[in-house]
Image (cartoon, rainbow, N blue to C red):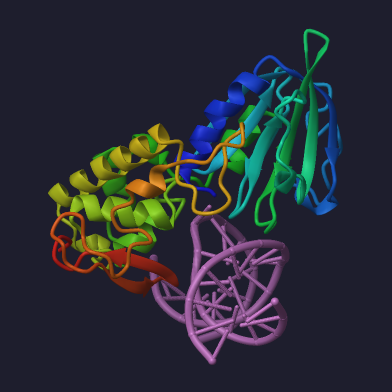
Length: 284
DNA sequence: AGGATAGCCTGCGGGC
DNA sequence: TGCCCGCAGGCTATCC
């Protein structure tokens, strides 16, 4: 799923279920799906926040951290096909297709009463959970290689992190150390809206172009969050609902179709091993 | 430094 | 209908 807008929308839909809730039971169904940071031992129920009360859901890029009152923290990464779904255990149960590939499960309570379950599914298993002992360890150790969050990236930050780089701008945007949260969809979309070809070398971008690019990144991510993210196949939020931003994509997934601005056929190339779609006329 | 490749997995759609 | 192939939102390791 899994780029910034999808993780942020998940965070927002998960908050009402998790904030203030206590984890009665944490179950790991696959030992290789959750690890303790800095060790090679699989996570125990305690590492998975059993007995803890959740006080905060914090996001950086595509990572989501579940933070407990006592400092215990669990980093959630969705990989390609991860889903975190709240099952309220009332009449609206999680649909049958959502019952397969569940690798972790948390049973919740609130004020001593049952408050449903949270399931982590991930058919492709590129995602996972990492436990850290404190928020400090999360920020300064586990997340230390993540660049500034893409949702609030400034031109100055982007410029600083691209200076001197001779690689193409598209693979640079996918580098989570440059800025955190942009993946293949939103890299193509932001480059389209800023009128920049994905193949342009970072070192050749003008100050004005970088300013436009930073603004386009913020704008396209904000708009996608407003639409509940993009659902190409797997993505759903905590309630099991799909996003709708895929209907508003300008270039991603539209190779050969007319550019929504100029009408010319959109071109598809492979750049850094990733399919890349752009308009040869609107992007210079 | 950064490009290319392979690998980790499942599931889907297209072509035959 | 069914099988094989390629491809997919992420990320890491390794080799050049």
